[in-house]
Image (cartoon, rainbow, N blue to C red; front, top):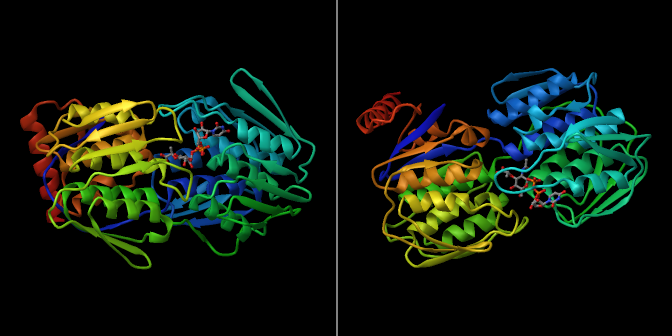
Length: 442
Ligand code: EPZ
């Protein structure tokens, strides 16, 4: 196993190139199942979750070829319509095969995802919507067995604007007979990207980005003639902006889109950072004064994204004054707070609200990542903290952040990825010095 070691206290200056969005790439790669043939998708990030998705598609009978950020997938045949437990337990987004497999193949066997660190995360809304389209499900032995004699368009009201629930239903409705309306649909940019991708295959979806999606079913879809570019990752973008806000410095993130994340940019401005934007770049810098405390409440898009809550918690722990962070999407998404307190943060949790009294500085410590975004928050804390920080269980990070160490080296971070059996502090410091020197020399 490996860990990340960071020598904190260095300002971040320069530019970071943002990768394609994990949460757009996953549903889009899986949605290729609805259209037999060879698909080409570009700006795909190189992440553990992407590899898991491609290996799942391979097991279904759809081989793929990755060359840099471009992925070719051949969905001409479906040999095996199952997403087994050993795949789904590692990546719950595998449940996204439900809609496409039922639409294309008429049956599927998918392991129930089970809970994860941040919550129970049931899929009742996914199943409710697909049942409305004419699917039948039975649950047995931790698996959901689905079948249909043919999908029919329906009017569906989601109890909650679930992101992958909307995506699952959408990916089936495109091949249903008749028109489907999804009310209270998720409005996230990644859902819009999926709608655009499906329309590039010949689907007829309107209302993308609104809470009412109208899908006119078609009898057949085929691969687009041009490669489809995945939209930029707004959460990766926000994470690097938070790192610069925490450490100070002058950072520009490129190959991104400020339009995807106005709630995050406005919140960063509230903390006292200066933000400048262009069509595909965002610059953040701070004039040396301490960050200002703030209040934030996570909401479905276009509200403040839950996937940025942990990163903002780190900013709050350093801000002047008392901040309040309320998490309304997941029931257990404050696990990073305990780790931040090990670094000196002053946090009090009551229900789904954390009250954070800012401190002058955090001190480096060994901390444990619990989920993808919590691990990013701990990296930011290490970058801004004094001394050495070790972030363990970084397999969480590898799921959603492409080339994180190298991107941070590029803007002046003193950071290294080492085996987690190195515990001697002098050795850890030496590893950080050597890794940073190599990066600066290259
Ligand atoms: C997607 O998860 C993202 N994952 C998550 O990103 C993100 O945090 C989340 O949306 C919210 O924006 C992907 O897109 C692959 P939800 P998803 O269904 O679809 C409840 C990351 O860090 N719910 O919108 O699973 C559920 O329990 C990940 O990149 C039901 O009750 O989220 C949760 O409390 C983490 N029944 C809430 O809705 C259902 O059938 C939000 O879930 C579905 C969801």
